[in-house]
Every structure is written in structure tokens, then in C-alpha cells.
Length: 172
Image 1: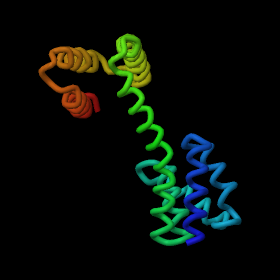
Image 2: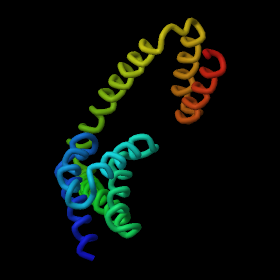
Image 3: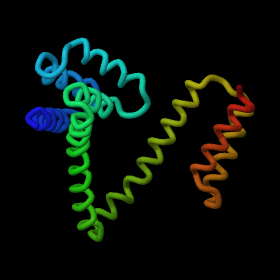
Image 4: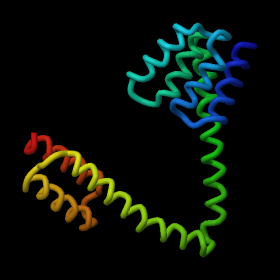
């Protein structure tokens, strides 16, 4: 029981003090190597979590928790890793839910929409530039996709999937 409480505290602290990624791996290394796992186990955990699909941080937490205390340890480490972001998001959602009727929130959201649209446009352009030359076929897929999205009759997800399939079939 003491090990499970220690695992919970370590993963709660790591996920409160850092964002996911290299910062959390470094902090987790400092907190666990030599105290709970060996350096070899930690390196193996980082390598395995990097090649598996999904969140590296959550897989690393489950691996270390499992190495220390079996299945209960993996579950405790997972719950401690998920708890901080979940509580923060719920808190922000509750605050925004209470403020949503205020005019400044509505204006803020209305101002975000064009900014996000421009950001997405520039991102799409950068991806398109890096993708190489596709000729008229690539431009045709882009224009048809844009027209389909603007029509509001076809969901955007469907347009993106179909455009991807057409691109694989005709641009490969």
C-alpha cells in the first residue's frame, strides 16, 4: 500500500509540475530511477512508450507503475497521470460555462474564429509547400475539397477522408 501511495504522489507531482514530453521524462527520471526502478528499466520504458501508438507519458506511467507494483501500480500511476489535466479542464469548463452569457466572452470567441481560420490556412499552405509538386491533380483535389466543405452538406471529416483516399489513389 505504501508503494502505491508513493507511485500516486510521484506521478501526480510530475504531471502537476511539467507538461508532457521531455520535461516530464526528465523529472520522472529524477523521481524514480534508483528509488523505484533501475536505469535500465527506465530506458526500456522510455523506448517502449516511444514506439507504441498513443500518449508516451501515459504509457511510461503505466510501465513504471507496473514494474513497481504490478497491475495495481500501473492503474495508480495512470490515474495519477490523468487526474491533474482532467481537474484543470473541468475547472476551466465550469468557469467558461458560467461566463458564456457575458458579452465579452462571446466577442472573444467571435474574434478567435477568424484567427484560427487564418492559422489553419497558413498551416495548410506550409504542408502543401513541403509536400512537393502535385500538379493540377493536387490543386483539383484542394479546390473540390474546399467547395465541398463550404457547401455545408458534407461533413468536413468525410471530405478530408475522401480527399486523402483520392490523393493516395491518384497522386502516388
